[in-house]
Length: 494
Image 1 (cartoon, rainbow, N blue to C red):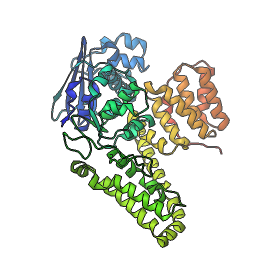
Image 2 (image 1 turned 30 degrees about the vertical axis):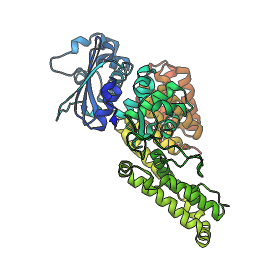
Image 3 (image 1 turned 120 degrees about the horizontal axis):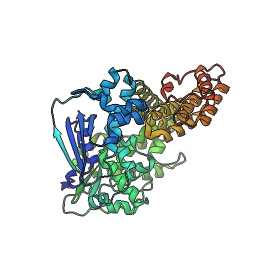
Image 4 (image 1 turned 180 degrees about the vertical axis):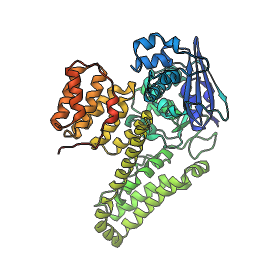
């Protein structure tokens, strides 16, 4: 059995995967024709980049983000000093602030990396350098974010299908699954671990190009591995994979053991009662419960899995099987079932609180990262928070504020500001945030309407009044810096 070698295809995402998940430190050299770039990593995190592409250099980035004037931009060569970082020189001369420099460095790291994703035949080499560090370490950016956004943004390349079609994808874990969209999660859930990628596609009912990009994303986020040769769960090399049983279990599937089913079942246990675990209605007879249990036992008993799989996923397999067994032992006994039914309502009413607590934790983590101006990382946690609690206006508001600091996410920021407004129309801060977003884009009429709405919600909102007055006086837009002073827990009218 041969594990897929990433050297079979030269693409930046494969190298990012290797560097991040193996916590490597050193320099990644990328060459494609006349394009030359060097990416510097510290324990898996991208912290610095050097590029020969003029539009990706720091001076151009600062000008694009309107952090320096056109005069300073025209005289950029005058600021270059031997052995001095141009950003530090500009900051020391008072031409940019520490915040300006930080935002420009993050933007440069992101865009310089994302611009390499269209190339599948570049010369890429990673040079290990133990102990390597850089002064710009604080400007690190989330490597998984670069992977997910880069793959989604790039166009489909036939090389993806060529290099993955005959390989067998196997689910490795779900630690990064929170980064996936629902459609991408569906692709992950379709992977049985016994079939080649092209056969998985045949039963996936999704567009082919979307499937290949999604599978590649799963690979680079370390959610799946790709192997050549026989990789059937519970089989040895050279033997055919077991055929699925035609007898459907209570969950509507077959009894062939699939580790992705175990992981999905394990993750869903906290939100399920005993009837939901067995997938039977509360009116089920003893025979119904017994039949459901034996069908599930065939699918999830540890003996059904290969020893290697048992070792890697023993905790999840045991947890799922114990839950199935406990549900069965309780519901098959009439007295225990009667007691359970009487108390289940109160007991399981508390279960959603676990999800609410998890959402609040993600929100607090995102808020901390936002305060540290690590906007890319903040977006990752806040996206998870809004997925867990879709009715929290302040969650969407902070997400939109973080996205508004990332040039590539301006459209998404607008959508999330509007979502926050729809959930909390009495909260002026969402209107102010959207107003700043429009103002930064030069849409002054739209911006003034949002500031006016903020004043309608809170007539004493000083920032909204100040910005509205500036627009009416024809003041030049100053960008989104005002967002940093917003309090998303400020004045609210109910």
